[in-house]
Every structure is written in structure tokens, then in C-alpha cells.
Image (cartoon, rainbow over all chains, first blue to last red; front, side, top):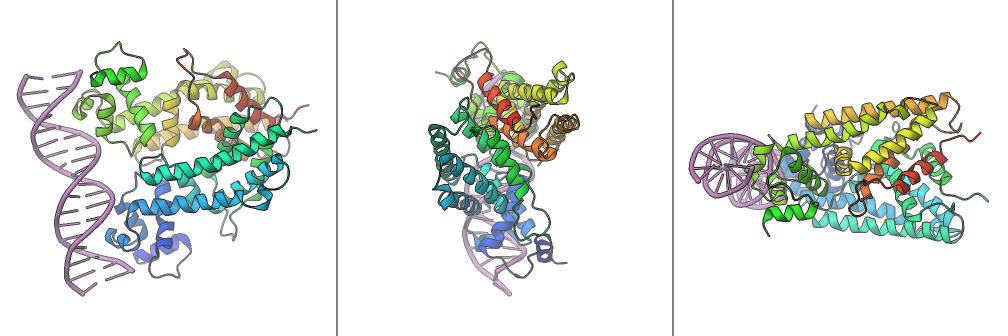
Length: 208
Length: 208
DNA sequence: GTCTATATTACGATAGAC
DNA sequence: GTCTATCGTAATATAGAC
């Protein structure tokens, strides 16, 4: 019935009486994704969190800090995929498929954070830093695709640069519509992961 | 050397001394795409156009009118594709391929307008109206995909709902990176269109 | 058609009480 | 940890001269 109760009702996470930077971030990221970062005022955040504007500043130093924390969380999840054994061993085409599969899963597990990351434009230092880190990730995946071509596992007519962009486009577009079903422990829908992988690799992989 | 000259230099369209709503829109849409609509102030627009803030209001009634004109132009282009003969005759799978091809081409011809449309969030009436019109387009294409499945032209393992989303994701992602080459008459790159079509339909079409 | 000047409101952030 | 009150700035838009 209280404003705080209203917040908890929406997220089924009512144990906490007060906010931490982390729990406040969860609320903020949701609002950022609904309204866009620039379209969200501290007043919007305060209403969504059920506390006053000035109380938000007790937990974080600025609106931009919320953005930085959010995109960091997304980028850390994506970067970790490239350090997993499946991304480092075997033929490049198989590593690429592994990375596609795991990237899609990370996108689902950290959906609001990755969604926000994908919409960053570059207006502030924080946003430009996020874009640079994201480009780094993209380039490491593009390198995998180039190597797969060199190893002769790609269809010969595939333009590698173009294919990399379409692959990312397809994976990232999942953030536009994917919503986890019910209250599962793991929000990853394997059927969606399989659809992404099979759709993308039907056009890439050379079957010999 | 003047501010007006600076504008013209960027767009190779220097015949006009003053702005019309249309030419002002071209400038505005560019800035909207760089900074995001909410991240763009009338001050930003005035600097980009080389005229004062208040002069902008001589041509358009508000910032939101610029947005409405822009997304309208994008939506009109997309909607027209569905009325073309190639989208209305033949097997559904072929009509779907035609629509994919033509939608990608429209995206390239009206790139900044479609880019802006794809980023609209729904904060204002104008934005919600644009989202509704866009959903209408999406649903008509999704219906084509359903019909292609009913006609037995899709791979049996394809989830139609999912496939529609991945198809749109791939097409729309072209707006994220595509930049026309040089100063051609027609900014459509057929190689990119072919790559989109062949990548998407390799995972969709059943070859019998 | 463009300008300067300004009205009015909304924004991010801080001060200081409880 | 949260609040009310407020500061300073930047936002959209208008008034009226040229």
C-alpha cells in the first residue's frame, strides 16, 4: 500500500526495506529502457522507486553514474563470454557459434542492461566509453568470422564484413522483443537461442 | 564562410538561400540521429542549421513536429512497399522475399528517417502513433510469413513468430551501420540487399 | 525570414532538518 | 536513509523589432 510496497510488488523482491546502489539500479534501468536515458528525469526515477529525488543522491552521485553502472554490467557479461574455453578452442566457425549462443544467453540474463547498452548514442564521456568497449567486443567476434573464412568453413559467397554486421544485428535485435517467461530461475529460452544460431549459421556455414 | 554556407557544404545542396520545412527537416533528422531525439535541444538544431532558435519556429511549430514529419516519411516509404505488385502476387514466400528486398532498399533510400523511426520509444503521442503504424507494417509482413508456412515453403522446424522477429531484426539492423557510398544518385547498395535476402532466406526457405 | 530578448517551465543536483 | 526546500542552469516556446 505504501510507495515502497508498490515497487516491490512489481519485482517480487520485497525483502529489502531500503535501497542499495544495486537495487536502485534495477529500477532505474527499467525506466531508462522505457523512456530512453535522455527522456528520463530524476523525477521519473524518484516516482518509479517510490523515494524522493534527493534520496536517490544518497545512493548514487548522479544520473550518469546509474548509466555507467548499467552498461558496465552489460559489457562485463559480454566480455566474459570471449574468455570462456568454448570461445578459445577448436575451429573458428565452432568458436563463433559458441560465442553466438553464449552472447544471446547473456543478453537474456542481463536483458535490461544489454538493452540499455545497445541504445547508447555517445553524447557523454560515459557513453563514448561504453561504445568503445562495445566496439572492442564486436571486433574480436569479427576476427573470429575472418578466421573461419580463412579456414574454409564459410560459404564462399559470404562477405565477411557484411556477415558480421548481420549476425550482430540479428543477435542484438533479440533485446527488442524478448521477455522472460514467468518467474523462472534462468531467463534463458533455449528455443530462441537455437533459432538465432540456426538461422544465422544456415547462411554462413559451408556444409562439406 | 557564413554559417549558412557551412550547412550547404555538408549536404551538396546549396541552391537554396533559406530554409523550408523540408530542408530544415533534413538537418534536424541528422542531429536527432546523432544525439537522440530527447538528447537534442532546439539550441543544437539552431547551431546545426546555422540560424537562430526562434527562426526554426518560423518553419515548424515545435520540435515534435519535426519528429512527426520525419517518422511519417519513413512510414510512408515502408507502407508503399506492401502496395507494390510484387508484394501482392505470387506465392507468399516469394512475396516475402520481395518485401524483404524492397524494405531494405527503402531503408537505404530514406536511411536517416527510418533510423529515427526505429529508435522511437513512445514517450509522446507522436511517438506512440508512430509505434502503432510500425506495428501495423510488421504484422502485415508477419502474416506473409504465416502464409508461406501454410503453403509449405518454410523449413518445418522454423517457428514463424520467432522467424519474423529475427528477419526484422536483421533488416532493421542495417540502419545501424549502412552509409551510402559517395554521391550516387541511388543510395541503394544491391550487394547489401542480396546479403540480407540470402542470409535470411537460407534459414527460412525450404528447397524442394 | 531572421534576429535579440524574454517568459515559463523542467531539469540535475545540493543544503540541511529529522 | 529519507525528506522538503531550493539553487542554478538549460529547456521549449513566444514577443516584437528589423
